[in-house]
Image (cartoon, rainbow over all chains, first blue to last red; front, side, top):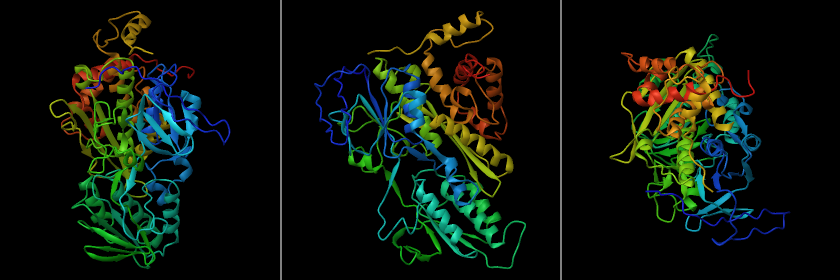
Length: 436
Length: 114
């Protein structure tokens, strides 16, 4: 159980006064600072709200450096609409430096090399060592290696940004009745309905482009969207996506469950699988996920390739990782991996850290009995219709896990234009609460 | 440096409203930060501290009775039909009361806004 934080000597970051400055590797006997320091690494859907709420809820009495190599974060949420041409990438791009002004967060533009839990230091690639009282690792995912795969030729577009733009360009350039091949990674992966949503939005886009969907019909060929799913079936909103695949896109989408992609021939735009070779005009490979590179280098991952944490605090349960919290896609509590859920975890984590730093336990019966998170999302199914999915999780004391609350899991089972509009309202609020 | 979790909210609510009885609040002695954490889970859809963007219900400053009863009504739906019906089933009556009390105690508008 976590008790009140023991007094820890603060290790100060010696900022480079000019490029030649050398950051010192400081020991535990370094000069004490006036405020506790909680470093947040990664400015995405869990990192950004972590930093905000650590400041908001501490009055603000915690120093919060936010470390990210990129000052702007591009949202994966809603990014499938960029692929279909319904949204521009700029609308999904958020400048993390705006958090500094609003919440007094220190933006540190650098790459985090590793967390050294034993000594309470974070190694930055350029600026050296940075000591902390707590660190929050919010660095997303890494992909498992796939032999022959080149993401510049077969984009994943599953970490939003230039990859999204690249896949969009390839879709625009492909022949009207061409073939789009995509893979669905083995669960667990980021955004359970996401790949199926992508299949629908791209089927709609290509179908309209080819004139086989929409008001303007032509006699050209029918495009194909080939979905190679590593899982035994659709993993989220099964009823909704099964109906969409069959009823809306029966002539376009070909769905294959139980597919293991063994290698990629990037030059030939082909995938070798247990069901044979699949080729396409555009190939979108979304490989199997694992915890982030930073988590891996910092030895925060278990054999499962995900980071085991205590869901009461999101603190690592591995030895020598006390004071290291991992939230969002890298953690292994079993809650779905999504931006909405990452935001939820950020608040639980921030609250736990503040309590610990102020000498209060995060393990009071009252807190454990009222510890919840939730997930909700909308998925575009057609050009102007969407479905939704939602669930609430609560801490279960006997098992020490977050468990789905009965009755709270729901899916739309259908799609409509009201949900499409609601999707924009939901995402606007999620973005505002996440990025300030 | 130590800083204390806030237990001030309930007292502040009573003082600023001047009348305790018109504003059903969480039982004195409850940890107000737990209300805050519970309520923060609504922010992903309803905005930070219930100050929403766009066409969705704002929660901040709404009447406790309305917030509490609306969520309880959603729980009693025979067939949950939308996201909120399912979300409401994720919470106990007690948690709904605490969430409603938290938002009811907030000003209707953020400071500096109309």
